[in-house]
Length: 229
Length: 240
Image (cartoon, rainbow over all chains, first blue to last red; front, side, top):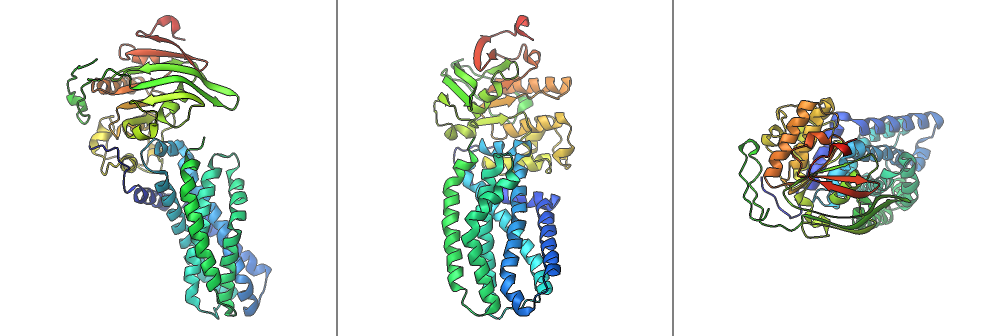
């Protein structure tokens, strides 16, 4: 068994693989997110009876708000695992870098929310009779950038609220105000693509900038968050 | 201790042979104060601890034993004072020389023993922990059931195996014998004695001091956040 004082490599991959394995076995986060999103789709479809044009106008907001609320469930679950048996302390005493943990958690949450979006999008299309009048392919970068915006901040703020007494409430309180610019960009880009009236490029650029700024900020600050007492 | 050669113990073969040539303290605490709000868990602790020894940390609940261990592990920052381990106060730079076993298991309940060891091994750059890591603590490495289905004694053993993964020079153990049957606890003590003989410095926080009688090199008594006494023998009058 060799021992080195160097920073170990492959920690991000190992942590991501461990998180995916744990989620595959428990399905805690995915089941909660799916159930919640399904409820939103069904309840809203009963509450409103929009025509095709109205659906295109409101779908962007509806879809992203549903995914944002569902993502909060997953974000709480992934950190809660690290609290059971104080496993996070085992990470903190190791030479593994804090950012490896953050990146692994953010990537894991990205995968969970992406799976949710892939499963729920056909239902949204079916229930709201959606058809994009603009370039539909642009929905892919909007979804990817929007999902990363949600999970990168969500992972960071979930770690901050980890040690608070009411972390389930604290996370949305911290996350939602910071997510407003990203949410605005996601909703407007989606609506622009669905209605075909305006270009979504401005919103996609705004979303990209938001992602870059907040990813860097989270990476710079996560070590402080992880080792805060 | 200087220049003392220690025989390799074949029953604990995966530990490398260490020879002590350095008589300088492995840990130096200088007026360490740790406060949680207005409560001081450690009140100006100053002490030196030598390498290759087994220290039993004793005291009542709330004496500051666990806080002392967390400060040594780098999990809690001293409010005042300084901690030097292996000659440096930058504890992050020596964390690869440290093994920490807490009162909670620090294990993922949903994974098997070997899966846990493989993951925690990666955190230290160990790509593939061997079966010896499990068998050294008396566990069967072929066990595939999740840790949640382990008995408390098995969890404690696995937790010890996790703390030993990186072959640390300094081992910090918080209540390793709690909820463990007497036979298993004695086996753990034998294991700790072997590791001490292999040159490791071991701190054991325990309420079962009698288990370490004849094994520990020193009994460190704590009370109200201070070290009040250090004895070579477990004095019966002080056992409560």
